[in-house]
Image 1 (cartoon, helix red, strand yellow):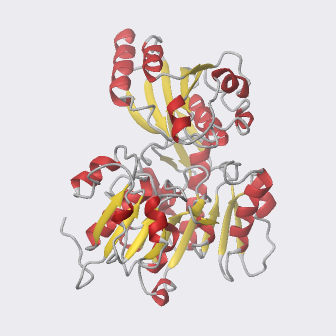
Image 2 (tube, rainbow, N blue to C red):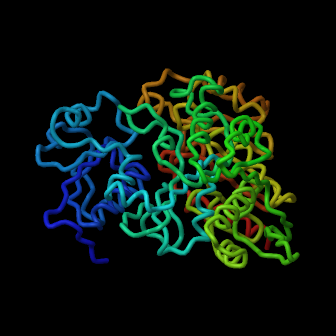
Length: 470
């Protein structure tokens, strides 16, 4: 694809922690726009590594180098993977190039007065909801920013000057290592969606009340004539999304009416028509309701909405089908927080109630590896017939966290038969030893199970199940 050129002299931009899901997409979008892009990171995994390499943007070596912050840079963009003592970040804060924090890029990549001509939709993405709204919006109308790949889009960051709608995944995490404000406090949304509030990021928000307060601030930032759409059944959301501002429209939603037949979910419309969809689970059905409300606010008709949702295959790693056999399926999901873990496992068990469910969770985030947070997982992993928890002690070292005992992890889940594994080879061997006739596998992680080839494993499992069925 031919690159766009928007400046006589290409902007020179450096991205610190370029390997992140959003950061590498932003690097590719800036490169396509005509900027001269460089980046750095101490770890870069697939698919970011391959995508950056294909565009000629992969750093020559991993690690940080203050010399990368050259005086002629137009901007430095920092991702959250960088720590406050990062040598490049420290150099970038010295007099010289402007330090653009990630949440501000979307408003400052164009003149400020132009940004205010756009409708900004911030979807707080507790349970993978943003992709449902995106599925129903015509592509030429949208400026998109999210981390998970969507079918039909090669980049998850679009930088254009004329899109009337800006959709942003409303991440509550910190803006940058040097800006402690949650990202979604900076987006100046017109339409806000809160899909649920479940305490996370204990390393940043030490109490549930402190975490919930960030969402209250987001809700209160909804402007005059703005719209706040929220999950009316979520207890935490109810505490902050109450109709207190007479100038704001508040819309509560629940799961879309549906029926499940032969492992397939069908939406029920107001005309009692059935619309088959490719995603499933209560959390997805709630997101579909929220997306429908968003589209209604944007003037999109119901028939167009249902047509778009029916064709939507889901986002990568959001209950993504890895492999399907005659009597077995393998799914992977980004779930790692307790509420997401429970919702995802329950969804797959409900979708295939007559099949055994084997589910494995990888603990990979700061919160999930913190002994103080682990009790939040109590009874969140009860739905699977076989429950596994995996973590790599090396990740604890890399995140500068203290060692974690397998027994401590097992006790936190309050499930006597849970199995905790700390070696990826042992994990693969355990899964291969299971009987996969009339059984499904669910793998959940924000990591990679230490490079485990999930496709090869899934092919082996579903092939074995098919053979057993014959």
